[in-house]
Length: 164
Image 1 (cartoon, rainbow, N blue to C red):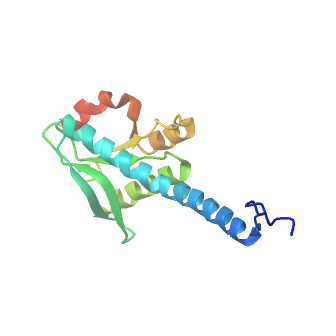
Image 2: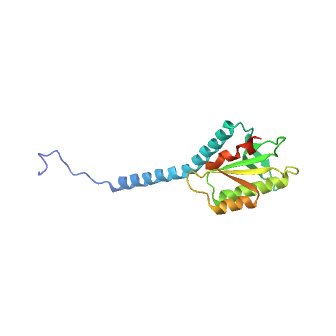
Image 3: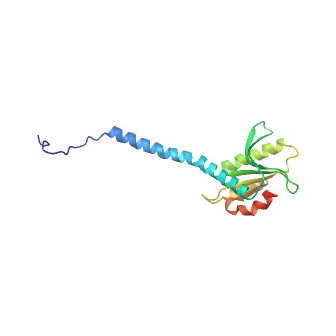
């Protein structure tokens, strides 16, 4: 026997096991990608909440408002009316893309239509610009519907309007 005096033996390549490991690694990477967006949204919500707390802004978080359509809509922050300012609706948008902006604009138009007397509410969209710059189409869409686009990197400029 040629291998009798040697401790070295050729390994049997288990192709099936290696393919399984490759598929599992691919699935793990996919899971990280899928879970990334909700975590970014959650972290951005907390950043906005901390900003409001730091600047003594009164608010109620995670409010549901009924719309004219009969659907309930989730609003991130509702700032009550004061002597100086009307009610303010604030949404933290972690990924300011077309679909997210469209969803917020639909929420606003549906809830404003249902809330008679509250149509004077000011609307703000806190936009996360830490990952990528905000597109001009996003800003134009928000402005067209009377929503103040509050870009996160320039958020200090909105403190007075939100806190008063």
